[in-house]
Length: 136
Figure (spheres, rainbow, N blue to C red):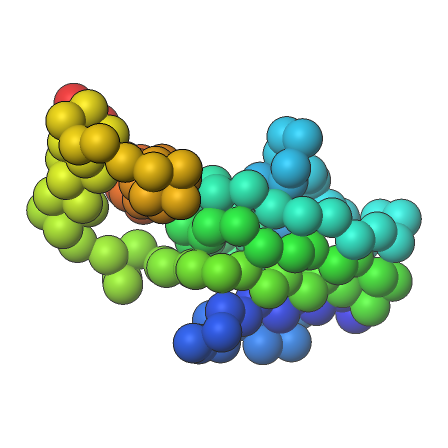
């Protein structure tokens, strides 16, 4: 059996569920993982994690930075942040994106504040990606 576990420091989204495949936003591009994949550990970037539970349709989760471990038993993902479509509201994402972009363009930010605003832009855009037809 090939299983997926997806957790954040605050919640457990998927625990030991049998899967057909996972596509993760790895550090240097998308990583498609199928049963029999070579073992590896890599970092993840903010992006959309796609997975198919055994015999089900593809599911999407917006994730931020984290780690992915692939073993013969499955895939373990520890992300700083993860949200399924049910956890997100389009209007909230649009507001967060507008606020982060405003900070970047109008405020004098130190390096840490600038990096945080960039992360917020990426999280909001990623959240919007899991909703079809929301980009304007």
